[in-house]
Image 1 (cartoon, rainbow, N blue to C red):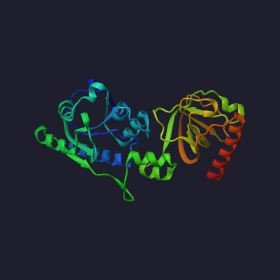
Image 2: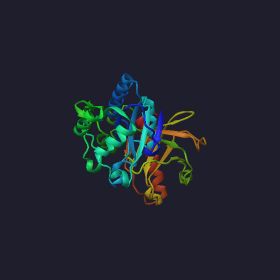
Image 3: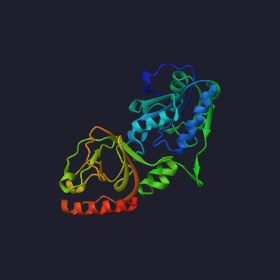
Image 4: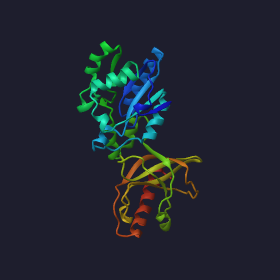
Length: 304
């Protein structure tokens, strides 16, 4: 998949199918839209262009929500689905003033030479969110493209959405969230050096930076950890580590029966069950005792 970062790097295409959105998590609803757009692109013999924004409009307007996926994770999932081009538009002060009609005419029609557009049934775009499916329909006649609305995907009668999945993850309902995502929820990244305080209480951890402003999960969890040499069991803490005066949200994993050096390796942490919320302890020894209980709970969950 080709990635184009910014409209200034975009050359005019000889036609394409377009879908636009944040695609946070690339859940089953997003997948339906993208796969439908791919099928249309193949029938027309043109590439599929998926347009997303960085930062998201919500983040730009200081309405940041927990992210189901980092940019890198989202890009990987789009690639896996078979998207041809991922156009990432820099959502800045200048772009935020672009009205919906200008966006359609100057970007979708003039620069992308769009032949067909598929959007979600609730998608809004442009300054003041004035653009919608009806506007696209009106402009399609004079500009020579077709527009199609993708109806919401339902699961047991409920609409699949990123906000619903965020709520499920916050509640620790990972099984239900996995049904809507189409996969188990995970966070991945490179293992980095931490402050190594866990070693002093016999619970050494691996540390993975969270590449998102707000994590959709916080607390202590039973997890699987995928490393290049296999799948392991462990306990994960996502939070600010109040006992040691932490200020930044970190992801730390204590892996059972593991003593290898894995700095710089890629790790994938798969969330299975929530054990408890994060809390501050009066002493490091109190924390050690609680971690031992957390490990026991995770062992019971995995039936180890």
